Length: 384
Ligand SMILES: *[C@@H]1O[C@H](CO)[C@@H](O)[C@H](O)[C@H]1NC(C)=O
Ligand SMILES: *[C@@H]1O[C@H](CO)[C@@H](O)[C@H](O)[C@H]1NC(C)=O
Ligand SMILES: *[C@@H]1O[C@H](CO)[C@@H](O)[C@H](O)[C@H]1NC(C)=O
Ligand SMILES: *[C@@H]1O[C@H](CO)[C@@H](O)[C@H](O)[C@H]1NC(C)=O
Ligand SMILES: *[C@@H]1O[C@H](CO)[C@@H](O)[C@H](O)[C@H]1NC(C)=O
Ligand SMILES: *[C@@H]1O[C@H](CO)[C@@H](O)[C@H](O)[C@H]1NC(C)=O
Ligand SMILES: *[C@@H]1O[C@H](CO)[C@@H](O)[C@H](O)[C@H]1NC(C)=O
Ligand SMILES: *[C@@H]1O[C@H](CO)[C@@H](O)[C@H](O)[C@H]1NC(C)=O
Image 1: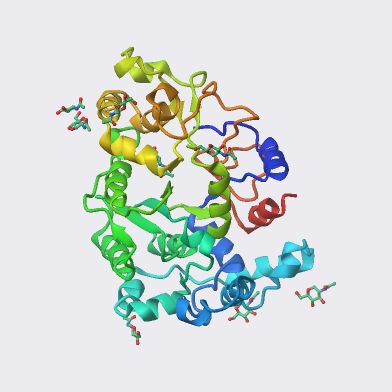
Image 2 (image 1 turned 180 degrees about the vertical axis):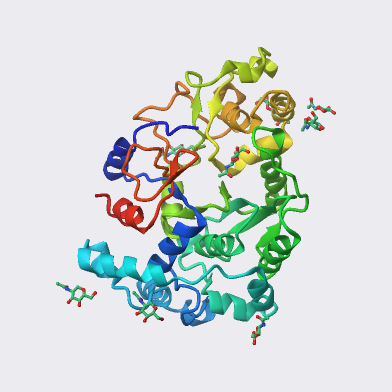
């Protein structure tokens, strides 16, 4: 699962190619509070933004529409323009504000607020418009595999929410009932957000990591329009807007983005067994960005089912299954990788940004990943 190539190169790549992946941050609850409150949304307790409704803005020209959104998601007391220009003074002031962020919103807060969905959307500042034609015509399907921290999940959902996308949320079987009820109540406020009908007790290294993805894929499949599938956990946050994602995925042009490696794979995981149809065995990353046809192949094709049965008997199947489908072009799945299945400068890992120690870390490392805070967020977005 290590970063497939040094982060510095990564930024170089981003700068030069302008093909940028999803760039999800791995963040902890504490640092996430800091991160979000200064940058995108109001800290809990400050006065609410209003939801941006289609009615109000659909007649506006695109530029004006985007400005209307920008005004609605502004953070009082932060001069974002100055921060983005690298003004140290303003950045320090913005960071200072994060010291004041109140404790996370409780499950009961959400259960109460979602009794009136229109009010919930408004209070929390959901963007209830597709904003641009381009986005509307390029729906994205998401799976969110979550198990704790309702406010964190809700903020992630809000950041990626658009009325034309579709979201499947899998709540771990082990999660407390209150958490499940909260996430369900939030999902019930949107026609395009739903809870996976089956709940799995997810245990690292077992087939249960893969299962929720498959359940969500199957349930998302019924929505006919989406073009790409992205899987997320509740501990990530987007570095790109929906509009930027659509631009990026358009450049992907149907390509599947799942990293693959033979060199760094541990063959013992496969228990010396041969894969069905002699498929090349590779290891992949946990983050996947795949096209609709790829998901269709998983759901409908017997070869995919045989492969699934085989990976079920190996260890850490979730790192094998999607990767093998991507590394075997003879299967003829749209957008899969035809080159040597190793990461390289020409084929970097771009779906997520994680700092595995190649860059300085302002706060702490958790399971070898730097938990990003406002400090790094600014650096990273500014690229300095
Ligand atoms: C720096 O920010 C403080 C308030 O945060 C302000 O009083 C001061 O004038 C600013 N200095 C400069 C040089 O902008
Ligand atoms: C933090 O909150 C206190 C009390 O509400 C307020 O006086 C103070 O100005 C706030 N500090 C910042 C940096 O916003
Ligand atoms: C529930 O929400 C209403 C307003 O929508 C508020 O007046 C009330 O105090 C809330 N109750 C709890 C327990 O938070
Ligand atoms: C994406 O799906 C793969 C395969 O099931 C899984 O291993 C991984 O944990 C998922 N990633 C995220 C971020 O949920
Ligand atoms: C996009 O993919 C199609 C096939 O799916 C191909 O014909 C076309 O050349 C590709 N466009 C670019 C810019 O690579
Ligand atoms: C997969 O394995 C199950 C039993 O675990 C079996 O019932 C099923 O027929 C197998 N499917 C394929 C496609 O091999
Ligand atoms: C995976 O294996 C477990 C038991 O080892 C079995 O219960 C389950 O049906 C299998 N699933 C698939 C899709 O093969
Ligand atoms: C399943 O995939 C195999 C190999 O990719 C292909 O030959 C076959 O036609 C597919 N079957 C169906 C029903 O699409």
